[in-house]
Image 1 (tube, helix red, strand yellow):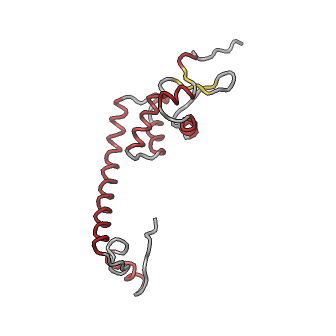
Image 2: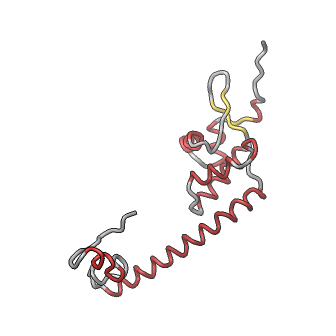
Image 3: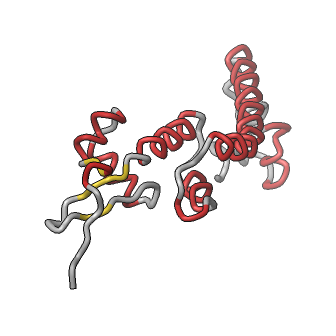
Length: 154
């Protein structure tokens, strides 16, 4: 039986992909372990990456840059048929979904910034009156006078 190998000119070594993407080889291996990219193996068990991996990496990095967790990126990539490389249309569809999540995070951070600014101006350091750590002394009301909560359970 004759074994056929992929056209090596269409595949890049980890070093070549690293130079083209600006990512360390260890990052490529990490993304591969996480199921975000794939490699093929030569007869000598060396990794080779299809050239379209560069576009896939650009997609991953753009999504990460706006705060999309790797698990969501992986899930999005897994929706593409046959592990194809994301197209501009794929990016538009997925980024629309992520935009709503990003808008919500921005709203939460804006509220936190306002709370922090109020706390800095207040300077009370009172866990009974602090609107940031104990709004309305809800914890004291629920657990009796003198009860304080230093950190919210997450």
